[in-house]
Length: 399
Ligand SMILES: Nc1ncnc2c1ncn2[C@@H]1O[C@H](COP(=O)(O)OP(=O)(O)OP(=O)(O)O)[C@@H](O)[C@H]1O
Ligand SMILES: C[C@@](O)(CCO)CC(=O)[O-]
Ligand SMILES: [Mg+2]
Image (tube, rainbow, N blue to C red; front, side):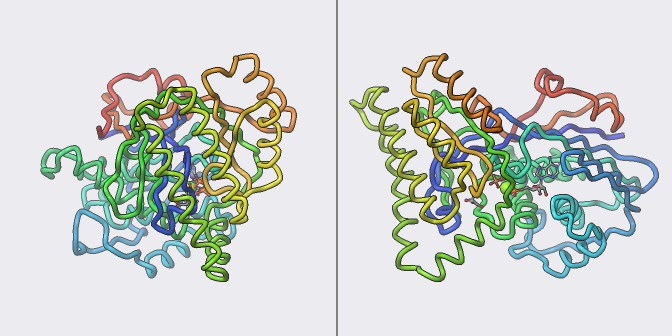
């Protein structure tokens, strides 16, 4: 009975959120906070799905779920989304207005419709995901979920096996492309930066449709992440910026160009000879400030995010929103000269506002698979704590 864990990280966007949707460059890195999935075959032709982070536990007869015939470009996804299939799945899932759950379930079944083989249909499978990422807070929980789904379905159905003849880079690309489809189900019109960082890991410069460039020297930066706990949906924030853009293109386009130059300036300061670390961090902090100002002008800040900036700036620290904004998370640059006492004070002040602070590593591994030698039960998977997965050896990453 094939049984696998898959895992993938969240992301933090340093510069360029929203502008990246319009083809501008953005800079982002993977987070130490990850999602974990279990996928394993069953014998009763059912799909048993358990997504505790969005309170979804459902079971379907596998034969009731629509399937797609072989398509052009197989095994890579079709160029455009299948709107008819999405409609069909929305009705099939029938989760009404509970968008968190329904989007997660539809994204899974959308990929299932294309990727499930006759062999899997003859058995059924369990699928469970749990995440250490806050859901809907700007740290790429949807992309991390999407990459876990894509990796799990591709692995279970044999697309990543040696028999398919794909090298590691091609496997990684396949995972990323299918995860992008799932992100489209959840987000509407994503740029692809979140699923790309979640698949590849590390720290990258990203521009839609172009080759990903690693960002040198990034690992050594420290950030504090603050979750304001103000809920928001990426899809809504992206749509709001779109409305502003369409109403005032001559005003908004130069702002998006300016954001593009922030990522380019970030690259320059990392590669500039003769810039010492103190100067680098100081310039990086200035870019953080400018980027937040532009995002705020695009209408995606929130009083809670301005509060994070106010508190951190009192202690000489620079912060910006990260991800789609409108609530969710802010990142604060911790320069090398900032003492642990100062960090503790900032955290205390932010937590007193009801915010949640996290220090996490950035630039770690991307998506990974672990083949289980002994099948596990859903209950056992759900009972493991976070440390269990991190301590588990033999993860294979797409590096
Ligand atoms: N652990 C999870 N289990 C199931 N579904 C999840 C999980 N994490 C995220 N999702 C799906 O992703 C949606 C949240 O995506 P959204 O893009 O709004 O937030 P985000 O990805 O955390 O933020 P951002 O895109 O700004 O980084 C949820 O509504 C749910 O459908
Ligand atoms: C807001 C946005 O730029 C980043 C969300 O993490 C949307 C996207 O790139 O798809
Ligand atoms: Mg998202």
